[in-house]
Structures are given as structure tokens and as C-alpha cells.
Amino acid sequence: MSVLVVGGDRLGNITSKLKVLGFTEIKHVSGRKKGHLTVDISKKVDVVLVLIDYVNHALAERIKEEARGNGVKTVFARRAWSHIFQSLTPETER
Image (tube, rainbow, N blue to C red; front, side, top):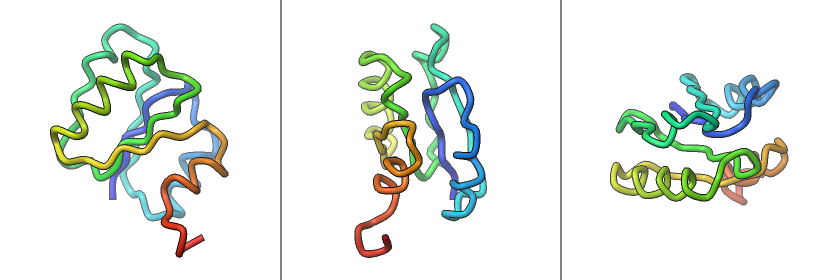
């Protein structure tokens, strides 16, 4: 599975924890540059993870619309791993 993480300057150990959850391809966009407002979400991406502490409202809305148009699941979470984990895993698997 592949994930596109939007937000945050550095991911730290989030990358390794996403790999444990089964994500083999992890792409990261900080969302701070003007060019990131036109992020192309590939149809090959399974999940778009938006770290809401680090992106502005306009970028979050644009990503949400583009992901919905491509049929890609979008998850919004704070940068804390506990919140990311809850957002990515169904309640039955926790």
C-alpha cells in the first residue's frame, strides 16, 4: 500500500511506524511551499494522510477535493502517532 503524507517539516519515526502498518511506499509533502497547493494525487496512492497541525485550510480543502475526485481515501489527523494510528486503523483492529 502507498500513502501520501501532507504536512509537517519532518516525519521522524512516523515513517517507520507507517511501514509497520503495511505501507510500503511513503511520500511526503510539507505543504509549506506555494507549489504544494497544486499537489497531484496519483491514483496509485491508497491513502492521503493530512497532518492538520501543519497545513492551512485552503490546502486541506484542495487535497480533500482532489482525493475525492480520484477515489482516494483521505485521513485527517494531528501529528501525534496515537491520533494517526486511530485514524488509519479500524476500531476492530486496535
